[in-house]
Image (spheres, rainbow, N blue to C red):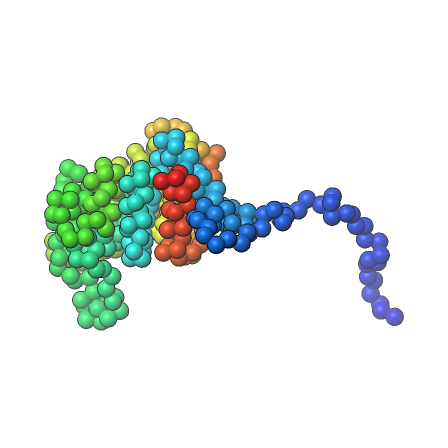
Length: 311
């Protein structure tokens, strides 16, 4: 005989499953695709559960923003360009979906290298041993010597690219955005980019050009009230911080900047994107987070948008 008391389970009360609210039903399950199915069929075949449902919802938000003339802004890290996604972003700009593009300094570097030379991304470990990491002459010359006092970083590079007509202009987010009249802002932290290692780097000029772009970005953010969309692709520190400050400026001047949608796409969910983009700004709006490789997730999102808008 045990010395310890135990609960008499025979006294448990049960109730019919029909009286229990259930979060998943068979209507929400995925559907198999028939032969010859198109991309719309694929989207509709996804389960109406968790991130699949979130992805469809975000696509709907972006399509509605386009129809209502509300801005869709994209903030992106350099990895988006390094994974070959410039054509996808350029297509969304040409389709009138993206109305503003923000990138960090590394994003501008990779865009310029692809545009002029058709290649980018060096072996950091190998070149670091010899002191040659980031010491390519042409890249530093193109970026550092293109900046001007009277316009911003992104506009100056876009202007230079369009003027030079380099071999791979069709792959340049900076150049194609400038051609389309879409603002591109470049947000630089001094000392973080390889071009800052070169003698022709002018800290005052770099800072002035990037500050100009911050003010441009503040204006873009002020326009997202009531239906705009802000997408973050792969920047875990710089751009989430820039966005939070730009939103503060916009709300300080314009009072009400709310009711917009944000989404973070990255291979890992980090603190600043989660707090500064997905959660904190969501005043009467909605924030989403998607985890996955850019080279899969961004084309998937873009295809869904274009299919929904029948573009």
